[in-house]
Length: 252
Image (cartoon, rainbow, N blue to C red; front, side, top):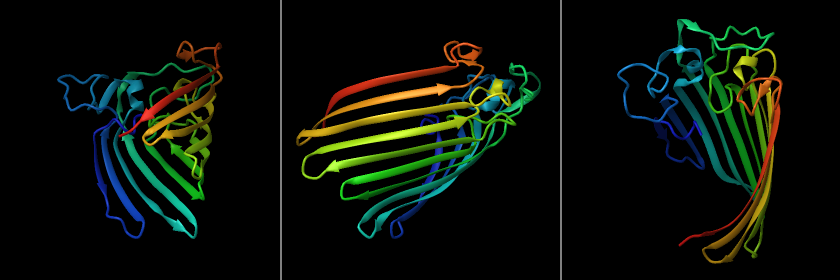
Protein backbone atom coordinates (compact mmCIF):
# COMPACT_ATOMS: atom_id res chain seq x y z
CA UNK A 1 0.00 0.00 0.00
CA UNK A 2 0.91 3.66 -0.31
CA UNK A 3 1.67 3.82 3.41
CA UNK A 4 4.48 1.25 3.27
CA UNK A 5 6.48 1.70 0.05
CA UNK A 6 7.66 5.27 0.49
CA UNK A 7 10.85 6.97 1.59
CA UNK A 8 10.35 8.41 5.05
CA UNK A 9 12.05 9.78 8.14
CA UNK A 10 10.82 8.14 11.35
CA UNK A 11 11.43 8.72 15.05
CA UNK A 12 10.19 6.22 17.66
CA UNK A 13 10.45 7.15 21.33
CA UNK A 14 11.54 4.88 24.16
CA UNK A 15 8.76 3.02 25.94
CA UNK A 16 7.27 4.69 29.03
CA UNK A 17 5.20 2.27 31.13
CA UNK A 18 3.66 0.73 28.02
CA UNK A 19 3.35 3.99 26.07
CA UNK A 20 5.51 5.07 23.14
CA UNK A 21 5.24 7.79 20.52
CA UNK A 22 6.33 8.35 16.95
CA UNK A 23 6.87 11.04 14.32
CA UNK A 24 7.31 10.66 10.59
CA UNK A 25 7.82 12.75 7.47
CA UNK A 26 7.18 11.36 3.98
CA UNK A 27 8.55 13.30 1.00
CA UNK A 28 6.15 11.92 -1.60
CA UNK A 29 3.89 9.10 -2.69
CA UNK A 30 6.35 7.13 -4.85
CA UNK A 31 9.35 5.01 -3.85
CA UNK A 32 12.43 6.03 -5.80
CA UNK A 33 15.80 7.62 -5.08
CA UNK A 34 16.28 8.61 -8.71
CA UNK A 35 15.79 12.20 -9.80
CA UNK A 36 14.20 13.30 -13.07
CA UNK A 37 15.83 15.49 -15.72
CA UNK A 38 12.38 16.61 -16.90
CA UNK A 39 9.30 16.85 -14.69
CA UNK A 40 6.71 14.20 -15.65
CA UNK A 41 3.97 12.09 -14.11
CA UNK A 42 6.46 9.21 -13.85
CA UNK A 43 8.80 11.20 -11.56
CA UNK A 44 8.84 10.10 -7.95
CA UNK A 45 9.85 13.57 -6.78
CA UNK A 46 7.21 15.46 -8.80
CA UNK A 47 6.11 18.69 -7.08
CA UNK A 48 4.04 20.48 -9.77
CA UNK A 49 2.31 19.01 -12.82
CA UNK A 50 0.30 20.04 -15.86
CA UNK A 51 -1.60 16.72 -15.62
CA UNK A 52 -4.56 17.34 -13.32
CA UNK A 53 -4.74 13.72 -12.13
CA UNK A 54 -1.29 14.12 -10.54
CA UNK A 55 -2.91 16.48 -8.03
CA UNK A 56 -4.13 13.39 -6.17
CA UNK A 57 -0.57 12.44 -5.20
CA UNK A 58 0.46 13.49 -1.71
CA UNK A 59 3.72 15.23 -0.80
CA UNK A 60 5.27 16.48 2.45
CA UNK A 61 3.12 14.25 4.64
CA UNK A 62 3.63 14.49 8.40
CA UNK A 63 2.38 12.01 10.99
CA UNK A 64 2.33 11.98 14.78
CA UNK A 65 0.96 9.20 16.92
CA UNK A 66 1.14 7.10 20.03
CA UNK A 67 0.38 3.57 21.13
CA UNK A 68 -0.07 1.57 24.29
CA UNK A 69 0.59 -2.07 25.08
CA UNK A 70 -0.25 -3.25 28.58
CA UNK A 71 -2.86 -4.72 30.86
CA UNK A 72 -6.14 -3.51 32.28
CA UNK A 73 -6.77 -6.02 35.03
CA UNK A 74 -6.92 -9.44 33.33
CA UNK A 75 -7.32 -7.89 29.85
CA UNK A 76 -4.38 -7.36 27.48
CA UNK A 77 -4.68 -4.01 25.71
CA UNK A 78 -3.15 -2.83 22.42
CA UNK A 79 -4.18 0.64 21.25
CA UNK A 80 -2.87 3.31 18.88
CA UNK A 81 -3.81 6.63 17.28
CA UNK A 82 -2.09 8.56 14.47
CA UNK A 83 -2.83 11.95 12.89
CA UNK A 84 -1.63 12.78 9.37
CA UNK A 85 -1.38 16.07 7.53
CA UNK A 86 0.20 16.79 4.15
CA UNK A 87 -0.09 18.67 0.89
CA UNK A 88 -0.39 17.33 -2.66
CA UNK A 89 1.22 17.82 -6.06
CA UNK A 90 0.31 21.28 -7.36
CA UNK A 91 -1.69 21.45 -10.60
CA UNK A 92 -0.24 24.18 -12.82
CA UNK A 93 -2.43 27.03 -14.05
CA UNK A 94 -3.87 26.35 -17.49
CA UNK A 95 -3.91 22.55 -17.08
CA UNK A 96 -6.76 20.62 -18.73
CA UNK A 97 -9.33 19.55 -16.10
CA UNK A 98 -10.27 15.94 -15.35
CA UNK A 99 -13.44 14.75 -17.11
CA UNK A 100 -16.48 15.07 -14.83
CA UNK A 101 -19.91 13.48 -14.94
CA UNK A 102 -22.95 15.57 -15.72
CA UNK A 103 -24.11 17.36 -12.58
CA UNK A 104 -20.69 17.53 -10.93
CA UNK A 105 -19.90 20.93 -9.44
CA UNK A 106 -16.15 20.19 -9.10
CA UNK A 107 -13.80 22.15 -11.36
CA UNK A 108 -11.71 19.09 -12.27
CA UNK A 109 -8.48 20.65 -10.98
CA UNK A 110 -8.49 21.37 -7.23
CA UNK A 111 -7.70 18.95 -4.40
CA UNK A 112 -7.70 19.28 -0.61
CA UNK A 113 -4.64 18.76 1.55
CA UNK A 114 -4.54 15.42 3.33
CA UNK A 115 -5.93 15.72 6.85
CA UNK A 116 -6.98 12.43 8.45
CA UNK A 117 -6.47 10.03 11.31
CA UNK A 118 -6.24 6.34 12.19
CA UNK A 119 -7.09 4.74 15.51
CA UNK A 120 -7.47 1.20 16.74
CA UNK A 121 -7.72 -1.02 19.79
CA UNK A 122 -7.45 -4.76 20.44
CA UNK A 123 -8.54 -6.37 23.72
CA UNK A 124 -7.59 -9.95 24.64
CA UNK A 125 -9.01 -12.02 27.48
CA UNK A 126 -8.37 -15.74 27.97
CA UNK A 127 -7.63 -16.37 24.30
CA UNK A 128 -10.46 -14.23 22.93
CA UNK A 129 -9.51 -11.04 21.07
CA UNK A 130 -11.81 -8.25 19.90
CA UNK A 131 -10.29 -5.60 17.62
CA UNK A 132 -11.56 -2.40 16.03
CA UNK A 133 -10.01 0.17 13.68
CA UNK A 134 -11.11 3.48 12.14
CA UNK A 135 -9.66 5.68 9.39
CA UNK A 136 -11.31 8.95 8.46
CA UNK A 137 -10.94 12.51 7.25
CA UNK A 138 -9.85 14.39 4.14
CA UNK A 139 -8.35 11.52 2.16
CA UNK A 140 -9.56 9.39 -0.76
CA UNK A 141 -8.82 5.67 -0.71
CA UNK A 142 -5.17 4.73 -0.21
CA UNK A 143 -3.66 8.06 0.85
CA UNK A 144 -4.80 9.97 -2.24
CA UNK A 145 -5.81 13.64 -2.00
CA UNK A 146 -9.56 14.25 -1.92
CA UNK A 147 -11.05 16.41 -4.69
CA UNK A 148 -12.35 19.69 -3.30
CA UNK A 149 -15.95 19.16 -2.25
CA UNK A 150 -15.54 15.36 -2.29
CA UNK A 151 -16.85 12.89 0.27
CA UNK A 152 -15.09 12.66 3.63
CA UNK A 153 -13.67 9.16 4.06
CA UNK A 154 -14.98 6.94 6.86
CA UNK A 155 -13.64 3.40 7.15
CA UNK A 156 -14.41 0.94 9.96
CA UNK A 157 -13.08 -2.53 10.65
CA UNK A 158 -14.07 -4.90 13.45
CA UNK A 159 -12.73 -8.39 14.04
CA UNK A 160 -12.77 -11.20 16.57
CA UNK A 161 -10.40 -14.10 17.15
CA UNK A 162 -10.31 -17.03 19.52
CA UNK A 163 -7.27 -19.18 20.29
CA UNK A 164 -8.46 -22.45 21.83
CA UNK A 165 -6.28 -23.09 24.91
CA UNK A 166 -3.93 -26.05 24.61
CA UNK A 167 -5.15 -27.11 21.13
CA UNK A 168 -3.10 -24.99 18.72
CA UNK A 169 -6.35 -23.98 17.01
CA UNK A 170 -7.17 -20.33 16.21
CA UNK A 171 -10.31 -19.09 14.45
CA UNK A 172 -11.28 -15.56 13.52
CA UNK A 173 -13.53 -13.30 11.49
CA UNK A 174 -13.50 -9.67 10.38
CA UNK A 175 -15.85 -7.20 8.71
CA UNK A 176 -15.00 -3.85 7.14
CA UNK A 177 -16.97 -1.03 5.53
CA UNK A 178 -15.56 1.99 3.69
CA UNK A 179 -17.22 5.10 2.27
CA UNK A 180 -15.06 7.54 0.29
CA UNK A 181 -15.26 9.78 -2.75
CA UNK A 182 -13.86 7.12 -5.06
CA UNK A 183 -13.92 8.33 -8.68
CA UNK A 184 -12.99 12.01 -8.66
CA UNK A 185 -15.04 12.67 -11.81
CA UNK A 186 -18.17 11.93 -9.76
CA UNK A 187 -17.47 14.52 -7.07
CA UNK A 188 -20.78 15.95 -5.77
CA UNK A 189 -22.64 13.28 -7.81
CA UNK A 190 -21.94 9.98 -6.01
CA UNK A 191 -19.56 8.36 -3.54
CA UNK A 192 -17.98 4.92 -3.31
CA UNK A 193 -19.21 2.31 -0.84
CA UNK A 194 -17.27 -0.89 -0.14
CA UNK A 195 -17.49 -3.73 2.34
CA UNK A 196 -15.72 -7.02 2.94
CA UNK A 197 -16.13 -10.11 5.12
CA UNK A 198 -13.43 -12.58 6.08
CA UNK A 199 -13.41 -15.79 8.10
CA UNK A 200 -10.58 -18.23 8.65
CA UNK A 201 -8.52 -20.27 11.02
CA UNK A 202 -5.23 -22.02 11.61
CA UNK A 203 -4.10 -25.21 13.32
CA UNK A 204 -0.65 -26.15 14.59
CA UNK A 205 0.05 -29.69 13.37
CA UNK A 206 3.46 -29.79 15.02
CA UNK A 207 6.01 -27.32 16.41
CA UNK A 208 6.85 -24.94 13.56
CA UNK A 209 4.17 -26.30 11.18
CA UNK A 210 0.77 -24.63 10.79
CA UNK A 211 -2.08 -25.21 8.32
CA UNK A 212 -4.53 -22.42 7.61
CA UNK A 213 -7.70 -21.70 5.63
CA UNK A 214 -9.35 -18.39 4.81
CA UNK A 215 -12.45 -17.19 2.92
CA UNK A 216 -12.87 -13.57 1.77
CA UNK A 217 -15.82 -11.77 0.15
CA UNK A 218 -15.62 -8.18 -1.16
CA UNK A 219 -18.20 -5.81 -2.65
CA UNK A 220 -17.81 -2.29 -4.03
CA UNK A 221 -20.19 0.08 -5.81
CA UNK A 222 -20.43 3.64 -7.07
CA UNK A 223 -23.21 4.98 -9.24
CA UNK A 224 -21.85 6.28 -12.53
CA UNK A 225 -18.49 4.46 -12.41
CA UNK A 226 -17.75 1.44 -14.61
CA UNK A 227 -15.38 -0.78 -12.59
CA UNK A 228 -14.74 -3.06 -15.57
CA UNK A 229 -13.68 -0.20 -17.87
CA UNK A 230 -12.06 1.84 -15.10
CA UNK A 231 -13.89 5.05 -16.00
CA UNK A 232 -17.23 6.86 -15.97
CA UNK A 233 -20.12 4.79 -17.28
CA UNK A 234 -23.56 3.36 -16.58
CA UNK A 235 -22.52 -0.32 -16.62
CA UNK A 236 -20.74 -2.41 -13.98
CA UNK A 237 -21.43 0.09 -11.18
CA UNK A 238 -21.27 -2.71 -8.60
CA UNK A 239 -18.74 -5.54 -8.55
CA UNK A 240 -17.85 -8.30 -6.13
CA UNK A 241 -15.14 -10.83 -5.58
CA UNK A 242 -14.45 -13.80 -3.37
CA UNK A 243 -11.66 -16.22 -2.75
CA UNK A 244 -10.56 -19.15 -0.66
CA UNK A 245 -7.03 -19.88 0.50
CA UNK A 246 -5.71 -23.14 1.95
CA UNK A 247 -2.07 -23.50 2.84
CA UNK A 248 0.69 -24.46 5.22
CA UNK A 249 3.40 -22.43 6.92
CA UNK A 250 6.67 -23.75 8.33
CA UNK A 251 9.04 -21.85 10.65
CA UNK A 252 12.38 -22.85 12.10
